[in-house]
Image 1 (cartoon, rainbow, N blue to C red):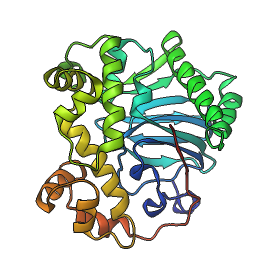
Image 2: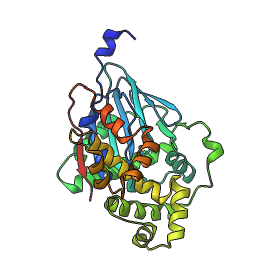
Image 3: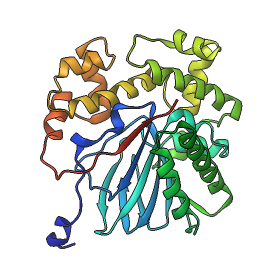
Image 4: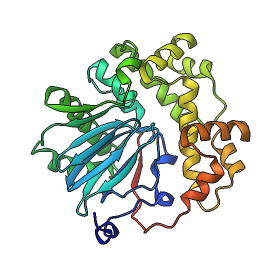
Length: 307
């Protein structure tokens, strides 16, 4: 592509991103997608619909190309990055708290693969999607909680319907060799209860006993079922939410690393540095410096708390 065309494309401004700081919120971005100079992550599942144009993601272990009419679902807890778009691209990104993912009635094996990094995409356009998604977007950004819940319910039903129609499932390299046996839907309901408690309390000093007690299950069972379902330990998921929140704080102008570590729920700076480097591939200080690169201004996404 010629440089003149690249200049016409929008760049993502990490300092104006809202989704990373609110893992228990619904966040809706209805806009031109921005090319990202680096990957980001967040503790929500993400649903994308492309109204026009095309875009390309670099996911965890694979890439995904989306075109007009595509509906896409992936787990945002793994680093992902928009690496290219057409100049006319316009899409909606709906970030759903993880608890809603476990309300889906997708086949257990498909759910399992998605939580381990696969990307689910419709294989042919549905003429009703554009009108419906525009309405859901309006409802999700309304002050009326009943409208928001109604839109979420309809969206989940639409995602459920993807299993009955032609779809593409893009799997990370090596996924088939690394999967354990999928769980039943009762187990997923327990996971939903676990996720709800963690998203409300991740900045506090919580452990597996606190988490299991909140779901009325035994700690060993809680640890086992969560690991099999999500590919993460309970501690790794708690850290993911803390790191997502810390990521947002570091992108602010006054993102002092020690203050960020403490406000995010980490008990020590050394623990924060180790966990952050593991997911970001760099120290919090380097991440903060890189996030302050100049980028064109953009409209902030709409963050909506879901009760």
